[in-house]
Image (tube, rainbow, N blue to C red; front, side, top):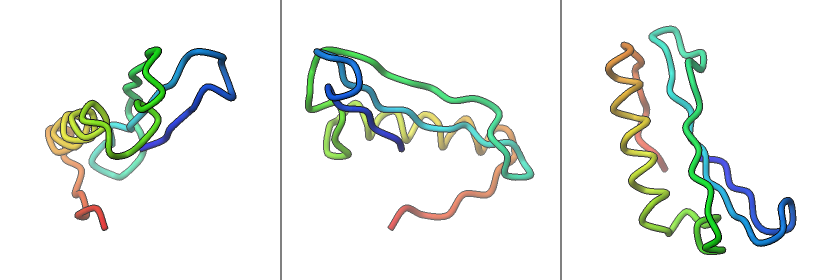
Length: 69
C-alpha cells in the first residue's frame, strides 16, 4: 500500500495498491481518494479492503503473493 496525506493535496487523502501480473510486474494500480484524513493510514478499514481486493486480483492474474508482515 502507498499513502498520500493532505500535505500533497490539501483536504484530500489517498491510498493505493498494485495489482501484480504472474511475473511480479504491476498490471494496474487501484487508488481510493477522499476527504477523510484517516484514509492515509494502514489502520483505515478501506485500506484493508483495498489490499484484499488487489491481492485477489493479483492472484487471478497468477501472481504469487507473500503474506504481509
